[in-house]
Image (cartoon, rainbow, N blue to C red):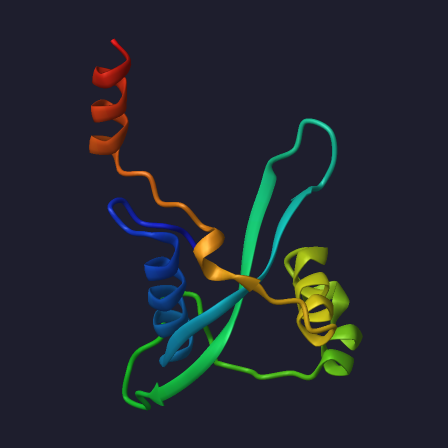
Length: 124
């Protein structure tokens, strides 16, 4: 998903999960940060993968436009569908999760525009 204006990365992952699955997601840790491009001159994609828990499901919630259904797959089932994945980052994040990689979510530093202005004023 995307981060909306005024939203933190953790807020975005919770919102995107709710919009695309109708599940409430509580992030606990970060699994990895992945950077991928289709090749020279092509758009580059950044993916941040989180581990956490889904604690509530709203079976009546409408999913985002373009989301046909929620489908939970094992790694082996994903491997069979590799050609359907948006990028190789998907399988890599699953592999890292299964390998037990967990990074503290507080590695993410949210810098507010007001903080930047305040620091610039102190330097000047």
